[in-house]
Amino acid sequence: MPLGVWLALIKQRSAIINLWCSGGWVFGAGLVLLGYRAHLPDWLTYGVANTCFFVGISLRVIALRHALHKPLYLTRIFIGVVLAALVYAYFHHVLRSEQLRYSWGSGITAVLLLCLAWLGFAIGRQEKSTSARWLASSYLVFGLVLSVRSGGVALDISQGDALNEDVLTMVIVFLGVMGAIVGNIGFMGIFLERLTRQTGQMAMAQARNEESSRLSHQIAQLDRRRSVGEIAASLAHELSQPLTNIYLITERAHLEVEKTGAQSVDKYLSDIERNTQKAVDILNRIRKFIQSKETQFERVSLNQVVKDIMDLTNDWIQKEAVDVSLHLPVQAVWVMGDPVQLSQILMNICRNAIQATQGQAYRHIDLRIWREADQAHLSISDNGMGLAPEVLAQVSTAFFSTKSDGLGVGLSISKSIATHHGGSLTISNAPQGGAEVHLILPAVV
View (tube, rainbow, N blue to C red):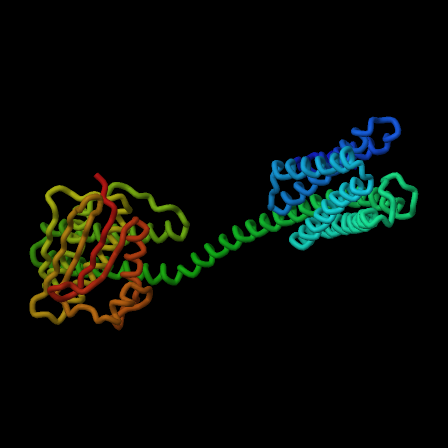
Protein backbone atom coordinates (compact mmCIF):
# COMPACT_ATOMS: atom_id res chain seq x y z
CA MET A 1 0.00 0.00 0.00
CA PRO A 2 2.70 2.62 0.81
CA LEU A 3 4.34 1.88 -2.55
CA GLY A 4 1.01 2.37 -4.31
CA VAL A 5 0.52 5.71 -2.52
CA TRP A 6 4.05 6.79 -3.39
CA LEU A 7 3.57 5.94 -7.09
CA ALA A 8 0.11 7.54 -7.23
CA LEU A 9 1.41 10.79 -5.78
CA ILE A 10 4.81 10.74 -7.46
CA LYS A 11 4.07 14.00 -9.33
CA GLN A 12 3.34 15.74 -6.03
CA ARG A 13 6.52 14.66 -4.30
CA SER A 14 6.83 16.32 -0.90
CA ALA A 15 8.21 15.67 2.58
CA ILE A 16 4.70 14.82 3.80
CA ILE A 17 4.28 12.04 1.24
CA ASN A 18 7.79 10.70 1.87
CA LEU A 19 7.21 10.60 5.63
CA TRP A 20 3.85 8.85 5.26
CA CYS A 21 5.16 6.21 2.87
CA SER A 22 8.32 5.66 4.91
CA GLY A 23 6.16 5.12 7.99
CA GLY A 24 4.14 2.51 6.12
CA TRP A 25 7.25 0.67 4.99
CA VAL A 26 8.75 0.65 8.50
CA PHE A 27 5.45 -0.53 10.03
CA GLY A 28 5.24 -3.26 7.38
CA ALA A 29 8.76 -4.40 8.22
CA GLY A 30 7.63 -4.80 11.84
CA LEU A 31 4.70 -6.96 10.72
CA VAL A 32 7.02 -9.17 8.66
CA LEU A 33 9.34 -9.67 11.64
CA LEU A 34 6.36 -10.48 13.87
CA GLY A 35 5.07 -13.02 11.35
CA TYR A 36 8.41 -14.86 11.33
CA ARG A 37 8.56 -15.13 15.11
CA ALA A 38 9.04 -18.87 14.97
CA HIS A 39 12.08 -18.63 12.70
CA LEU A 40 13.87 -15.51 13.98
CA PRO A 41 15.68 -14.59 17.22
CA ASP A 42 13.60 -13.35 20.12
CA TRP A 43 15.21 -9.90 20.26
CA LEU A 44 14.45 -9.38 16.56
CA THR A 45 10.81 -10.44 16.59
CA TYR A 46 9.93 -8.63 19.82
CA GLY A 47 12.17 -5.63 20.39
CA VAL A 48 12.92 -4.65 16.77
CA ALA A 49 9.41 -5.46 15.51
CA ASN A 50 7.71 -3.30 18.14
CA THR A 51 10.23 -0.53 17.61
CA CYS A 52 9.29 -0.62 13.91
CA PHE A 53 5.64 -0.24 14.91
CA PHE A 54 6.47 2.80 17.07
CA VAL A 55 8.67 4.40 14.39
CA GLY A 56 6.28 3.68 11.51
CA ILE A 57 3.22 5.21 13.17
CA SER A 58 5.30 8.12 14.52
CA LEU A 59 6.48 9.00 11.00
CA ARG A 60 2.87 9.14 9.89
CA VAL A 61 2.02 11.35 12.87
CA ILE A 62 4.79 13.72 11.75
CA ALA A 63 3.44 13.63 8.19
CA LEU A 64 -0.09 14.63 9.25
CA ARG A 65 1.22 17.36 11.56
CA HIS A 66 3.15 18.80 8.62
CA ALA A 67 -0.04 18.62 6.56
CA LEU A 68 -1.66 20.77 9.27
CA HIS A 69 1.34 23.15 9.18
CA LYS A 70 2.18 22.12 12.75
CA PRO A 71 5.53 20.39 12.25
CA LEU A 72 6.82 17.94 14.84
CA TYR A 73 10.55 17.46 14.56
CA LEU A 74 12.23 14.05 14.24
CA THR A 75 14.44 14.61 17.29
CA ARG A 76 11.51 14.56 19.69
CA ILE A 77 10.01 11.50 18.03
CA PHE A 78 13.39 9.74 18.11
CA ILE A 79 13.75 10.37 21.85
CA GLY A 80 10.21 9.15 22.49
CA VAL A 81 10.70 6.00 20.40
CA VAL A 82 14.00 5.19 22.14
CA LEU A 83 12.41 5.57 25.57
CA ALA A 84 9.42 3.41 24.58
CA ALA A 85 11.74 0.73 23.17
CA LEU A 86 13.92 0.75 26.29
CA VAL A 87 10.90 0.34 28.57
CA TYR A 88 9.63 -2.46 26.33
CA ALA A 89 13.03 -4.17 26.49
CA TYR A 90 13.10 -3.78 30.28
CA PHE A 91 9.70 -5.46 30.67
CA HIS A 92 10.67 -8.24 28.26
CA HIS A 93 14.30 -9.05 29.12
CA VAL A 94 14.68 -7.89 32.73
CA LEU A 95 11.28 -8.40 34.31
CA ARG A 96 10.37 -11.10 31.79
CA SER A 97 6.72 -10.07 32.15
CA GLU A 98 4.71 -10.92 29.06
CA GLN A 99 1.72 -9.04 30.49
CA LEU A 100 3.60 -5.76 31.02
CA ARG A 101 5.48 -6.14 27.75
CA TYR A 102 2.32 -6.59 25.69
CA SER A 103 0.31 -3.94 27.56
CA TRP A 104 3.11 -1.42 27.11
CA GLY A 105 3.69 -2.14 23.41
CA SER A 106 0.01 -2.26 22.42
CA GLY A 107 -0.75 0.74 24.64
CA ILE A 108 1.91 2.92 22.97
CA THR A 109 0.71 1.75 19.54
CA ALA A 110 -2.91 2.56 20.47
CA VAL A 111 -1.97 6.06 21.65
CA LEU A 112 -0.14 6.74 18.38
CA LEU A 113 -3.11 5.44 16.37
CA LEU A 114 -5.50 7.68 18.30
CA CYS A 115 -3.14 10.58 17.66
CA LEU A 116 -3.33 9.79 13.93
CA ALA A 117 -7.13 9.76 14.20
CA TRP A 118 -7.18 13.15 15.95
CA LEU A 119 -4.90 14.68 13.30
CA GLY A 120 -7.06 13.20 10.54
CA PHE A 121 -10.21 14.76 12.00
CA ALA A 122 -8.34 18.09 12.35
CA ILE A 123 -7.45 18.00 8.65
CA GLY A 124 -11.04 17.08 7.82
CA ARG A 125 -12.35 20.11 9.72
CA GLN A 126 -9.73 22.47 8.34
CA GLU A 127 -10.00 21.42 4.72
CA LYS A 128 -13.53 19.98 4.79
CA SER A 129 -11.99 16.76 3.51
CA THR A 130 -14.09 13.58 3.37
CA SER A 131 -10.96 11.51 2.73
CA ALA A 132 -9.35 12.83 5.93
CA ARG A 133 -12.46 11.86 7.92
CA TRP A 134 -12.35 8.30 6.53
CA LEU A 135 -8.67 8.06 7.43
CA ALA A 136 -9.36 9.34 10.93
CA SER A 137 -12.32 6.99 11.45
CA SER A 138 -10.33 3.88 10.47
CA TYR A 139 -7.48 4.71 12.85
CA LEU A 140 -9.90 5.72 15.60
CA VAL A 141 -11.64 2.33 15.59
CA PHE A 142 -8.34 0.47 15.35
CA GLY A 143 -6.84 2.50 18.20
CA LEU A 144 -9.88 2.08 20.46
CA VAL A 145 -10.01 -1.72 19.97
CA LEU A 146 -6.27 -2.01 20.56
CA SER A 147 -6.70 0.09 23.73
CA VAL A 148 -9.36 -2.31 24.95
CA ARG A 149 -7.05 -5.26 24.27
CA SER A 150 -4.16 -3.50 26.04
CA GLY A 151 -6.35 -2.76 29.07
CA GLY A 152 -7.63 -6.33 29.11
CA VAL A 153 -4.11 -7.71 29.21
CA ALA A 154 -3.08 -5.22 31.90
CA LEU A 155 -6.05 -6.35 34.02
CA ASP A 156 -5.21 -10.00 33.29
CA ILE A 157 -8.53 -10.48 31.49
CA SER A 158 -6.90 -11.76 28.29
CA GLN A 159 -3.55 -13.16 27.28
CA GLY A 160 -0.78 -10.84 26.06
CA ASP A 161 0.13 -12.43 22.76
CA ALA A 162 -0.31 -10.81 19.37
CA LEU A 163 -0.73 -14.21 17.72
CA ASN A 164 -3.63 -15.47 19.86
CA GLU A 165 -6.54 -16.90 17.93
CA ASP A 166 -9.33 -15.42 20.06
CA VAL A 167 -12.10 -13.20 18.63
CA LEU A 168 -10.59 -9.93 19.81
CA THR A 169 -7.26 -10.74 18.18
CA MET A 170 -9.03 -11.54 14.92
CA VAL A 171 -10.88 -8.23 15.15
CA ILE A 172 -7.61 -6.40 15.75
CA VAL A 173 -6.00 -8.09 12.72
CA PHE A 174 -9.02 -7.25 10.57
CA LEU A 175 -9.04 -3.61 11.74
CA GLY A 176 -5.29 -3.42 11.14
CA VAL A 177 -5.72 -4.54 7.54
CA MET A 178 -8.71 -2.21 7.01
CA GLY A 179 -6.82 0.63 8.67
CA ALA A 180 -3.92 0.15 6.30
CA ILE A 181 -6.19 0.10 3.26
CA VAL A 182 -8.58 2.91 4.27
CA GLY A 183 -5.79 5.00 5.81
CA ASN A 184 -3.63 4.92 2.69
CA ILE A 185 -6.58 5.55 0.38
CA GLY A 186 -7.70 8.38 2.65
CA PHE A 187 -4.21 9.88 2.59
CA MET A 188 -4.19 9.80 -1.22
CA GLY A 189 -7.66 11.33 -1.19
CA ILE A 190 -6.44 14.27 0.91
CA PHE A 191 -3.83 15.14 -1.70
CA LEU A 192 -6.16 14.55 -4.63
CA GLU A 193 -8.75 16.82 -3.00
CA ARG A 194 -6.06 19.45 -2.47
CA LEU A 195 -5.02 19.17 -6.11
CA THR A 196 -8.65 19.54 -7.20
CA ARG A 197 -9.07 22.63 -5.00
CA GLN A 198 -5.83 24.15 -6.24
CA THR A 199 -6.83 23.53 -9.85
CA GLY A 200 -10.22 25.11 -9.16
CA GLN A 201 -8.64 28.08 -7.39
CA MET A 202 -6.18 28.58 -10.24
CA ALA A 203 -9.01 28.44 -12.75
CA MET A 204 -11.03 30.92 -10.67
CA ALA A 205 -8.00 33.21 -10.29
CA GLN A 206 -7.39 33.09 -14.03
CA ALA A 207 -11.05 33.78 -14.68
CA ARG A 208 -10.95 36.71 -12.23
CA ASN A 209 -7.84 38.09 -13.89
CA GLU A 210 -9.40 37.79 -17.33
CA GLU A 211 -12.62 39.36 -16.06
CA SER A 212 -10.66 42.12 -14.34
CA SER A 213 -8.71 42.79 -17.52
CA ARG A 214 -11.90 42.85 -19.55
CA LEU A 215 -13.63 45.14 -17.07
CA SER A 216 -10.59 47.41 -16.91
CA HIS A 217 -10.67 47.73 -20.67
CA GLN A 218 -14.39 48.44 -20.60
CA ILE A 219 -13.96 50.98 -17.80
CA ALA A 220 -11.21 52.70 -19.77
CA GLN A 221 -13.47 52.85 -22.81
CA LEU A 222 -16.40 54.12 -20.76
CA ASP A 223 -14.19 56.69 -19.08
CA ARG A 224 -12.95 57.85 -22.46
CA ARG A 225 -16.52 58.13 -23.71
CA ARG A 226 -17.48 59.98 -20.55
CA SER A 227 -14.66 62.37 -21.25
CA VAL A 228 -16.07 63.25 -24.68
CA GLY A 229 -18.29 65.87 -23.06
CA GLU A 230 -15.33 67.34 -21.20
CA ILE A 231 -13.24 67.25 -24.38
CA ALA A 232 -15.95 69.12 -26.26
CA ALA A 233 -16.15 71.66 -23.45
CA SER A 234 -12.36 71.96 -23.47
CA LEU A 235 -12.38 72.48 -27.21
CA ALA A 236 -14.90 75.30 -26.99
CA HIS A 237 -13.12 76.77 -23.99
CA GLU A 238 -9.61 76.69 -25.44
CA LEU A 239 -10.46 77.78 -28.97
CA SER A 240 -12.56 80.74 -27.85
CA GLN A 241 -9.55 82.92 -26.98
CA PRO A 242 -7.33 82.35 -30.05
CA LEU A 243 -10.33 82.58 -32.40
CA THR A 244 -11.44 85.80 -30.70
CA ASN A 245 -7.94 87.19 -31.15
CA ILE A 246 -8.07 86.22 -34.81
CA TYR A 247 -11.23 88.25 -35.29
CA LEU A 248 -9.79 91.23 -33.42
CA ILE A 249 -6.54 91.13 -35.36
CA THR A 250 -8.42 90.79 -38.63
CA GLU A 251 -10.52 93.86 -37.84
CA ARG A 252 -7.40 95.83 -36.98
CA ALA A 253 -5.77 94.67 -40.19
CA HIS A 254 -8.67 96.04 -42.18
CA LEU A 255 -8.46 99.37 -40.38
CA GLU A 256 -4.69 99.51 -40.86
CA VAL A 257 -5.05 98.81 -44.55
CA GLU A 258 -7.57 101.62 -44.90
CA LYS A 259 -5.33 104.09 -43.07
CA THR A 260 -1.78 103.31 -44.05
CA GLY A 261 -1.83 100.78 -46.83
CA ALA A 262 -0.23 97.38 -46.73
CA GLN A 263 3.10 98.22 -45.05
CA SER A 264 2.16 97.00 -41.55
CA VAL A 265 -0.12 94.15 -42.59
CA ASP A 266 2.63 91.57 -42.21
CA LYS A 267 2.70 92.01 -38.41
CA TYR A 268 -1.01 91.31 -38.14
CA LEU A 269 -0.84 88.43 -40.55
CA SER A 270 1.91 86.90 -38.38
CA ASP A 271 -0.32 87.26 -35.35
CA ILE A 272 -3.15 85.61 -37.26
CA GLU A 273 -0.89 82.76 -38.24
CA ARG A 274 0.33 82.30 -34.65
CA ASN A 275 -3.20 82.27 -33.24
CA THR A 276 -4.40 79.92 -35.92
CA GLN A 277 -1.49 77.59 -35.24
CA LYS A 278 -2.38 77.67 -31.57
CA ALA A 279 -5.91 76.53 -32.39
CA VAL A 280 -4.56 73.76 -34.62
CA ASP A 281 -2.18 72.57 -31.87
CA ILE A 282 -5.05 72.37 -29.40
CA LEU A 283 -7.14 70.40 -31.86
CA ASN A 284 -4.22 68.03 -32.48
CA ARG A 285 -3.77 67.49 -28.74
CA ILE A 286 -7.45 66.64 -28.30
CA ARG A 287 -7.29 64.34 -31.31
CA LYS A 288 -4.35 62.52 -29.72
CA PHE A 289 -6.31 62.16 -26.50
CA ILE A 290 -9.26 60.62 -28.31
CA GLN A 291 -6.92 58.26 -30.15
CA SER A 292 -5.39 57.23 -26.78
CA LYS A 293 -1.82 57.90 -27.88
CA GLU A 294 0.86 58.71 -25.35
CA THR A 295 1.92 62.32 -25.04
CA GLN A 296 5.38 62.90 -26.52
CA PHE A 297 7.46 64.81 -23.99
CA GLU A 298 10.42 66.93 -25.01
CA ARG A 299 12.79 69.41 -23.40
CA VAL A 300 10.88 72.68 -23.05
CA SER A 301 11.99 76.11 -21.86
CA LEU A 302 9.46 77.68 -19.50
CA ASN A 303 10.89 81.09 -20.42
CA GLN A 304 10.01 80.47 -24.06
CA VAL A 305 6.53 79.21 -23.20
CA VAL A 306 5.86 82.45 -21.28
CA LYS A 307 7.19 84.60 -24.14
CA ASP A 308 5.01 82.75 -26.67
CA ILE A 309 1.89 83.21 -24.56
CA MET A 310 2.70 86.87 -23.98
CA ASP A 311 3.04 87.40 -27.73
CA LEU A 312 -0.21 85.52 -28.26
CA THR A 313 -2.19 87.56 -25.71
CA ASN A 314 -0.41 90.89 -26.19
CA ASP A 315 -3.27 92.56 -28.05
CA TRP A 316 -5.85 91.42 -25.53
CA ILE A 317 -3.66 92.53 -22.60
CA GLN A 318 -3.27 95.96 -24.15
CA LYS A 319 -6.98 96.20 -24.87
CA GLU A 320 -7.80 95.30 -21.24
CA ALA A 321 -5.14 97.78 -20.00
CA VAL A 322 -3.49 95.24 -17.74
CA ASP A 323 0.07 95.80 -16.56
CA VAL A 324 2.05 92.53 -16.69
CA SER A 325 5.34 92.27 -14.78
CA LEU A 326 7.58 89.49 -16.01
CA HIS A 327 10.36 88.15 -13.78
CA LEU A 328 12.23 85.64 -15.90
CA PRO A 329 15.66 84.28 -14.99
CA VAL A 330 18.54 85.06 -17.30
CA GLN A 331 19.29 81.37 -17.63
CA ALA A 332 16.30 79.51 -19.02
CA VAL A 333 14.48 77.02 -16.78
CA TRP A 334 13.95 73.72 -18.58
CA VAL A 335 11.40 70.97 -18.02
CA MET A 336 10.32 67.81 -19.81
CA GLY A 337 6.84 68.06 -21.22
CA ASP A 338 4.46 68.80 -24.05
CA PRO A 339 4.90 72.48 -25.07
CA VAL A 340 1.29 72.71 -26.27
CA GLN A 341 -0.11 71.41 -22.97
CA LEU A 342 2.19 73.68 -20.94
CA SER A 343 1.08 76.62 -23.09
CA GLN A 344 -2.50 75.61 -22.37
CA ILE A 345 -1.86 75.79 -18.62
CA LEU A 346 -0.31 79.24 -18.91
CA MET A 347 -3.08 80.48 -21.24
CA ASN A 348 -5.73 79.36 -18.76
CA ILE A 349 -3.97 81.00 -15.81
CA CYS A 350 -3.33 84.28 -17.68
CA ARG A 351 -6.90 84.49 -18.90
CA ASN A 352 -8.27 83.94 -15.39
CA ALA A 353 -5.82 86.48 -13.94
CA ILE A 354 -6.81 89.12 -16.48
CA GLN A 355 -10.50 88.52 -15.83
CA ALA A 356 -9.91 88.60 -12.05
CA THR A 357 -8.52 92.17 -12.25
CA GLN A 358 -11.67 93.57 -13.81
CA GLY A 359 -13.13 96.38 -11.74
CA GLN A 360 -9.76 97.46 -10.33
CA ALA A 361 -8.56 101.02 -10.98
CA TYR A 362 -5.08 99.65 -11.61
CA ARG A 363 -4.97 96.15 -13.08
CA HIS A 364 -1.76 94.28 -12.46
CA ILE A 365 -0.43 90.74 -12.99
CA ASP A 366 2.89 89.46 -11.70
CA LEU A 367 4.48 86.45 -13.42
CA ARG A 368 7.62 84.80 -12.05
CA ILE A 369 9.78 81.85 -13.02
CA TRP A 370 12.56 80.41 -10.87
CA ARG A 371 14.29 77.16 -10.07
CA GLU A 372 14.89 75.58 -6.68
CA ALA A 373 17.04 72.44 -6.59
CA ASP A 374 15.39 70.01 -9.03
CA GLN A 375 12.05 71.84 -9.28
CA ALA A 376 10.90 74.51 -11.70
CA HIS A 377 8.46 77.09 -10.32
CA LEU A 378 6.06 79.36 -12.16
CA SER A 379 3.68 81.66 -10.30
CA ILE A 380 1.10 84.16 -11.50
CA SER A 381 -0.59 86.53 -9.08
CA ASP A 382 -3.13 89.28 -9.68
CA ASN A 383 -4.47 92.23 -7.73
CA GLY A 384 -8.06 91.19 -8.00
CA MET A 385 -10.53 90.50 -5.18
CA GLY A 386 -9.16 87.05 -4.38
CA LEU A 387 -11.21 83.91 -3.79
CA ALA A 388 -13.69 83.15 -1.02
CA PRO A 389 -12.96 80.02 1.11
CA GLU A 390 -15.87 78.07 -0.39
CA VAL A 391 -14.65 78.94 -3.88
CA LEU A 392 -11.08 77.88 -3.08
CA ALA A 393 -12.38 74.45 -2.05
CA GLN A 394 -13.90 73.84 -5.49
CA VAL A 395 -11.96 76.13 -7.81
CA SER A 396 -10.14 73.32 -9.66
CA THR A 397 -13.14 70.96 -9.74
CA ALA A 398 -14.38 70.10 -13.21
CA PHE A 399 -17.40 72.14 -14.37
CA PHE A 400 -17.25 74.49 -11.37
CA SER A 401 -17.05 78.15 -12.36
CA THR A 402 -17.71 81.51 -10.70
CA LYS A 403 -18.37 83.12 -14.11
CA SER A 404 -21.87 83.10 -15.56
CA ASP A 405 -20.53 82.18 -19.00
CA GLY A 406 -17.77 79.89 -17.73
CA LEU A 407 -17.59 76.20 -18.50
CA GLY A 408 -15.60 75.33 -15.39
CA VAL A 409 -13.01 73.14 -17.07
CA GLY A 410 -9.98 75.42 -17.53
CA LEU A 411 -8.30 75.00 -14.15
CA SER A 412 -9.42 71.39 -13.87
CA ILE A 413 -7.73 70.54 -17.16
CA SER A 414 -4.65 72.58 -16.21
CA LYS A 415 -4.32 70.71 -12.92
CA SER A 416 -4.63 67.34 -14.72
CA ILE A 417 -1.95 68.38 -17.21
CA ALA A 418 0.38 69.43 -14.36
CA THR A 419 -0.15 66.09 -12.62
CA HIS A 420 0.48 64.24 -15.89
CA HIS A 421 3.81 66.09 -16.12
CA GLY A 422 4.78 64.91 -12.63
CA GLY A 423 4.07 68.26 -11.03
CA SER A 424 1.34 70.16 -9.23
CA LEU A 425 -0.86 73.20 -9.65
CA THR A 426 -2.19 75.03 -6.60
CA ILE A 427 -4.50 78.03 -6.29
CA SER A 428 -4.50 80.26 -3.22
CA ASN A 429 -4.97 83.85 -2.11
CA ALA A 430 -1.80 85.93 -2.26
CA PRO A 431 -0.64 87.63 0.98
CA GLN A 432 -0.78 91.05 -0.69
CA GLY A 433 -4.30 90.41 -1.97
CA GLY A 434 -5.69 88.81 -5.09
CA ALA A 435 -5.24 85.22 -6.23
CA GLU A 436 -2.04 83.31 -6.88
CA VAL A 437 -1.53 80.22 -8.99
CA HIS A 438 1.64 78.22 -8.42
CA LEU A 439 2.87 75.62 -10.92
CA ILE A 440 5.68 73.23 -9.91
CA LEU A 441 7.31 70.86 -12.40
CA PRO A 442 10.37 68.59 -12.31
CA ALA A 443 13.29 70.60 -13.71
CA VAL A 444 15.91 69.25 -16.10
CA VAL A 445 19.29 70.54 -17.15
